[in-house]
Length: 94
Image 1 (cartoon, rainbow, N blue to C red):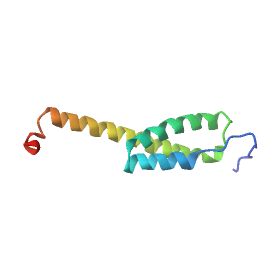
Image 2: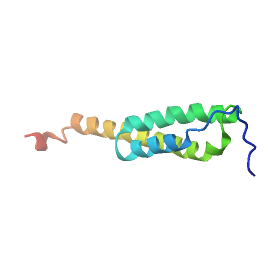
Image 3: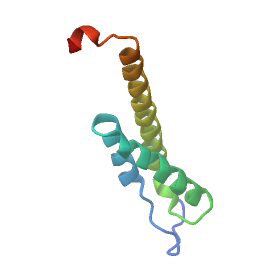
Image 4: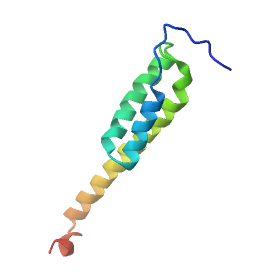
């Protein structure tokens, strides 16, 4: 079903959010945070009828990539500090 596009709807940013989500996964996790936040905002705008609904799938995919990138970054930092606290790096650092 093709939605009838209204000229008063704001254009979606699905491609941008998806690119940010992917960049968050492979390059730098702050892009993931941005994708998560922007995705949440845009999905609420789409569901509220104020933004072009054709980008909902791209927006959702980018948001999920952003969530995964953020969670992986947090887990990585936690593992690093746990290893540091338990002396796993003692042999490496001298």
